[in-house]
Image (cartoon, rainbow, N blue to C red; front, side):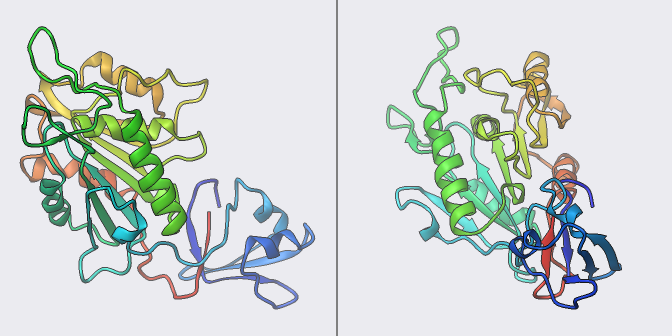
Length: 309
């Protein structure tokens, strides 16, 4: 077993004594050279001594199967959001995909997008930005301020995101999904378009080195200018960046900045001008591949199994 590898096992058993070991607390009470049998659902039994399992880089925890479908009561009542359950044929969710719309939009179109994705064992949460547009315009924005580009008169997407980071990173992820619903951060994914993509990257960038998310997908959303330079180690959350091959906010310098901040960055340039949501199956395919390689599954895992990471 390597660090960061999630493996479901049927049982941890003391090899000679014959009794089950169900939690890390029990492991920590055993002598280092106690031999343990790790029983996998499909791969049989592997033996090792408990010293290897005690090391945090080898086993973080052994726990019951994770996750449950979030409900509106898990989050502050002043937030506007929709929760989309996994497909009816799918087991209870073990992943959550959080969707953040772009400047001037609302959460409603992303509800339909989430349903169309139909990701197995994955709940989706489409969140509406907290601030309405000025001048009685329809739509919402994520910025701390409403700024305008003096040269074009357009609204500036890079308007500071401290409040949005608190809303998504603390109220949704930490207090809601982690503390109340029992998810790990590695089971949580962010998808953002435009300004929502900037918020997604800002949230991932605000987490500590050991608190990486499962992944971030940003369509046409670069790093916010207010995001500090990375420390000596790049952040470990995997990132997928998508945008047009011209007139895109994902410029070469913006992409270089993302790659200087995150260790694992994939980039897709669509053969078209500007940034917009995927228009067809071909444009959606890189997103599905990114998620397919990282979403977790409990299919085929016996009830009552524990998890070694």
